[in-house]
Structure formats: C-alpha cells, structure tokens
Image (cartoon, rainbow, N blue to C red; front, side, top):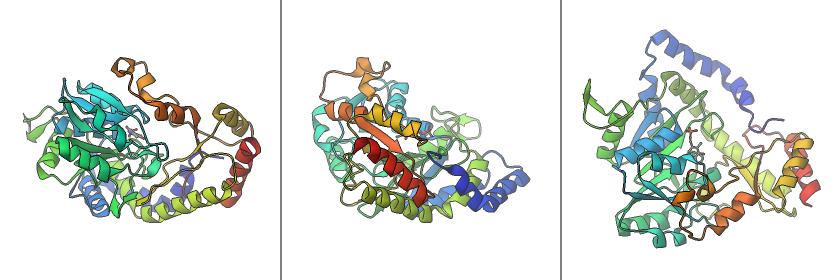
Length: 363
Ligand SMILES: *Cc1c(COP(=O)(O)O)cnc(C)c1O
C-alpha cells in the first residue's frame, strides 16, 4: 500500500506526459521555454488570479513573495504555529521575525481571533496557511489586515484547487504561493511552485526577482535570485492540469467515504468550514494515542505520516522567537494528528482495510 500513489496517475496520463516532455526536449528551450508562460496562463484561468508566476518550488515562492513585498530585518510577520517549517523559515531568511499565532480547534488553520493581539507597529504581513487542503478564514483575516494595512500571503502549498466562498485558493489575498512538490494536490515530477497576485506592480517585481531581480538583460533593478520553474516541469503540469478538476472531485469522494466509514469511531475526522471545499492534500485524524496508532497501522501494512509533530515555536531554530503566547491548540493538535493514505485513486478495498485497521485500535 502507498501513502500517496503517484504511479497510478502516471499510468493514466503517461502518453500526454511523455508528449509534453518530448516537446520540451525537441524545442531546445530548457530554461523559461514556452511551456512556462503556457502553464501560467492555464493557472490564472483556473484560479481567477490576474497573474501567475511559475517558480522553482513552494519554499522559494514564499521567499519571493516576501522579497517582493519588501519584508526585511526589523519587520514582524505573523504565521500559524502549526504548519510546515517553510512558512516561518522564509520570514527568518529575509531577516524578519516570525510571530506565532495559534490555530483554530476545528480547522487547524490560523485562528483570526488570536491575530489582533499579536499585531505591533513592526507587523508587516500575515501568512495564513490553507492547511491539509482547505482555505483559512480569509474574510476575517483580510478584514483585520486591512484595518492595520498589512499584506496577506496565502501559503496555498496544500490547497491548490480548493475554494473559499466560490473563489479559488490562491486568489483570495494580496499574494499567494503554492507548491508543485510531487505529493501535493497538483504535483510535478520534481520541484516546482507558483506565486499569484492581482496586483500588477507586485507581479512585475515577482517576475524580476525570479530572474536575479533583472528588469532588462544584465540590469538588476531589485535584489533577486534564481527562482525559475523548469520548462519540463511546466510541461508535466500542463498535462496534469487536464485531469486536475476530475482529480479534485475524486479526492472529495475518497474523503467523503472516509468520513462515512469513521462515523462512529473514536477519532476526530477533518472538519471543513462552511463556505469551503477542500482538496484534501491530507486526510488527517486527531486521536488520543497517536504513537500507538502509528505502530498498529504500520505493523498491519498501512503507511502513515504526521503533519506536523512539533509546533514551530518548539523548533530549535525558533524557540528564541517564542514569547509565551498561548499556543495550546497548536500543541494539542501537533501531539494528536495522523494522516492516512489519500490520493484520487484510492480503491474501496484498500480504504476499507485502512479504516478497519484504525477502528481496531481506536474503537
Ligand atoms: C510543501 C509545503 C511548502 C514548501 O513547498 P516546497 O515545494 O516543498 O518547497 C510550504 N508550505 C507548506 C504548508 C507546505 O505544505
């Protein structure tokens, strides 16, 4: 059994993928070839965002967004305490200070009620993460941000394809980022990512930063880096986008079936807030004895993963950024979450086995 079965998808669209890759190989345009703008245009159409800038990965997407916003040493950026490290580490990498906010009990996304108390004169931005495939509460977060004149960066690495009140993830904030790491809902065959915005000036800066801050050839208007998306990966993503809407629907079916099968089990299944649809990057349970359940599942051939076992304020690189604010929900959730195998092609028989093995243990 696979945690995320990527080979099944490959078998399904092999011809299209190989054709896309072959076109790149034949074209000789391996860096910033035609597939990159072609993909960007498909993704703007899909999300509704005005601009999409393909970049080398989801981590650098966050870094580039922060650089384009001019976030620098002395600034503070509010991030959830319960997320993948990159959300906060890129803030530190530009010299700014990540300030940790607690998450909501039910969605595990940044809790807007915990936000205002953390805002200071140094606060410049908020990075809500749309964790496990569902958007954070952007109406509430954007309203607070507007009041204090803060930028909002959606870390949409896990939520590409999700909707928030009928708008797509990556089109609900000042700027948004996503990742095309192979196991994400939309993944390529290596590293990849994208930045989205409706702001023309910001989009221009992001495009420049992606190529060493270059506005004209060998003329550097901004501090930048090599943040380009590979042309071959853009081709792979073009092929995958052709089946992506279908896969989003399949993911929802798999998740709904999990929900039904776990109805009376002693574990907490994903809570999707009203107005949201999730792409279920993960199907994550909250349980009492997580370590016991992992052992039980693994010894019965069911792979699992923990996203994420340590809240960020307890990470060695960030303990000095923690000033005693209440992060008890993040701590509780980090201690009890476990993700189950989840992908669009999970068959009923395999899913039944997973659920039965979990129920054996949790009751
Ligand atoms: C995967 C992920 C990233 C980083 O994306 P990469 O493409 O692996 O660099 C950032 N934030 C979150 C929430 C993620 O899940």
